Image (tube, rainbow, N blue to C red; front, side, top):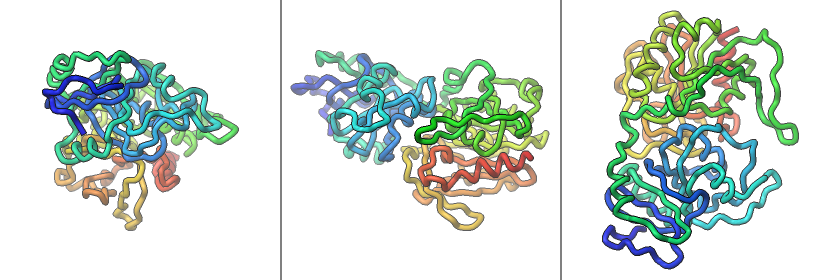
Length: 387
């Protein structure tokens, strides 16, 4: 899979490289933006949705290894972007990106990556890289693209080694929007685009943006809510001044304990006021912390669109989309917190509900619809509780 650190000479035709913090050098063919970027290398097992993955803010400061070999073959378009803020800094793929072949495509994936400022690396043995991550954990690394094939490998190794990693890192402050936004876009339909919601009589949800995917807000609208999105560090008074019927805690990147330094006190205060709360991914983790549990950095994380999750209530299994490198430690849940969902891959916590409160969260992404409708009931449950 990789050349030893002592072998820094690029093979013929190499215009891209991945350099791990331990000195491992992985050569390939660069595409997309020219330059270099540092981050944590993870892998995603989804067979579709690469554009949504690359624009998901939860992937900030990460380099995504796609296990599916054919990435970029359907091009890219404006409708499948999850957020206009920073997502993944780069991606690693097996096969070279081919010409687009989809009627919805507006631009080649290579060109789209350039416009997005993201670096791609093709021609890599992604199976070997995935096995390495599974065995040794997600490494810090630098991904680089130079058409002339000239790289300062020792400098890239040093950069990867000096990067502190995601543990203890609060990225929500750099990813969140910086002013309130009234959200009115609903679900997308072929030939019609995104629906528009009308009327102010709908229950009002204040959604706190820690690095949210736009499709979450669309699902809240589709479920019948009126949505106002607010920045990550919005104060309790400012949230309450908006007169919410319920509060949504979004997904986002980084360490939940770090973001929780300012977010958890707000969540605790909302719980004390019996405010209905729904959290997804990072929001779920911080809701758990607010309730008295703790989180932990995972060995390799969960990322993909094929993760089976068991619902304890009735034993049904949902096929879910996941993207998280931290998880709620199920052994730390206090007596007033019920575990509602669990991963069938490794038994990790995937959902909680706080007893006596209208507050619950899930680790996975119901808005990603891999089922495709296995988990939409969560939005209906939350919005329905506000009526």
